[in-house]
Length: 152
Image (cartoon, rainbow, N blue to C red; front, side, top):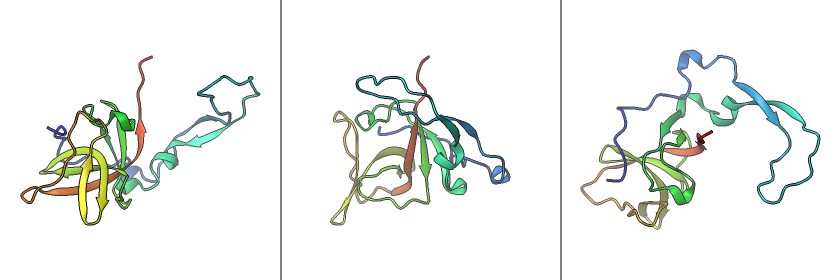
């Protein structure tokens, strides 16, 4: 199967009653971390970063969902990653989306050209999904961020 069945509906990222709550501010170091060769240490500059504003610009249309499986590993989504899904974003060709295929959620890259639609897996060992006439396909939302929990 392409995905695992999720509970009836994901919950919004921020409940309506909490939409006016204080932002989640965390320490944000201005220095970039070199992912190649290390650079000499510089004085660390810091500011406050609002994670809510960064990850959830539209609270009523933003949901968190947990990825299940390995079909998107080549596109940076691993099993158990947390997906930030925005239902207010327009799904376009090349974006990663959460779709409901026959009522089951799946995460794939959207292929939408020349009137053809398919959901492309990010792992060559998994098949792409080309909806057949008897299937229902609903693009549920656009993945805007991926939260990874790394072992410590």
